[in-house]
Image 1: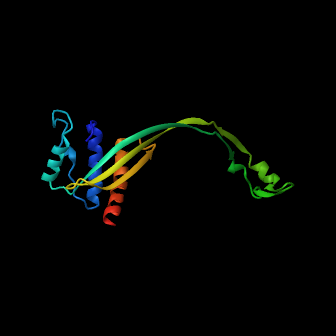
Image 2 (image 1 turned 90 degrees about the vertical axis):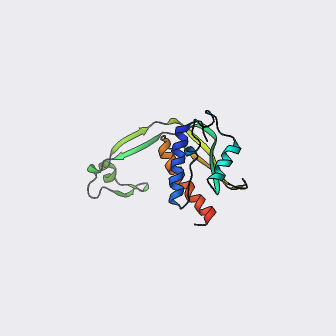
Image 3 (image 1 turned 90 degrees about the horizontal axis):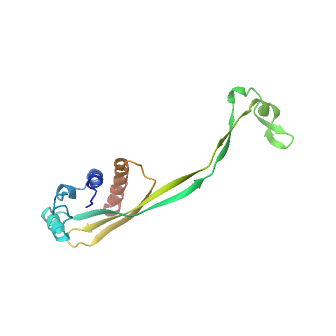
Length: 179
């Protein structure tokens, strides 16, 4: 349950699709606990558990954003030699020169190109840390947990949600069902 209903709906829908594709039966909380539920407040644990029992769910999956960090780093510049292949003629490749292995005069002369410089720059990496838990719906014991991090995820929540949901459903299926 999340105060950002739009993000919650996107993530729940993608998680549901990915889980159903792996053979799980899914009930989304957003179908039963709308923002109007409880006059805009999140329902109590007792209310949630009563609904879970009523729907005969086996497990409860939660995804929580536990931290987000920004780190600035410097990406150094680069020098690149752009060779002009049109000026390279027969026999104008690499050869033995006076200093040993290197470009022969023909390769040096015919392969002249432009020097390109790409300046260095600063960039900010964004890393998000998620915790996903699965709880037994009867005992409420945790039966599975995963910690994930996403560095510079796609700027679109929809694209990130689809990718994350598929990875998560694959891992849950493998870890809990052995498939």
